[in-house]
Image (cartoon, rainbow, N blue to C red):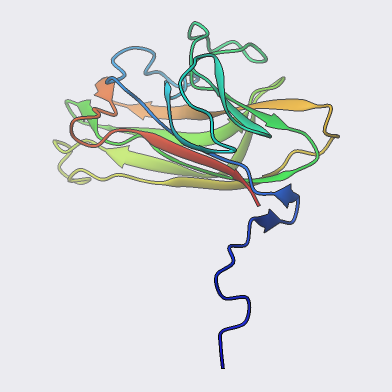
Length: 187
């Protein structure tokens, strides 16, 4: 007996057709490393619907990544590394900041809706420097499920926000070693 529905791929989700953007950084983030800043994701690695080339707000359907606007940590403002999500859908947000360099300490990130006053989403992830004796170098993954509310006409800005810093980090996300990444998808 053949497996039911063999040869098909489920592209439907609770909130409609699955849209996804997988993003990464093209360069090490060596500035904007304080609490309240966010990851500078600047490259769409994969998207559905597929986009190719171009610049600006890249992504598929209901998920877009800003790849060209100047960096800003002002709430509600467009910025490099921020995702725009269409309202009325449910999203799975995942990210990692990759390797951090600091004399000793850690950096914590958490997804945040920054459409207005920041609202933290899901649980935080913390990365320890490889030189931090008790942390011995670690890479955390931050995941959140987010129901935006609103309608398809509404849009929401989310970012992978730095929420706490211990020590003085000099850089995060070296793409040659352990770069940062994010995956944002409808579910």
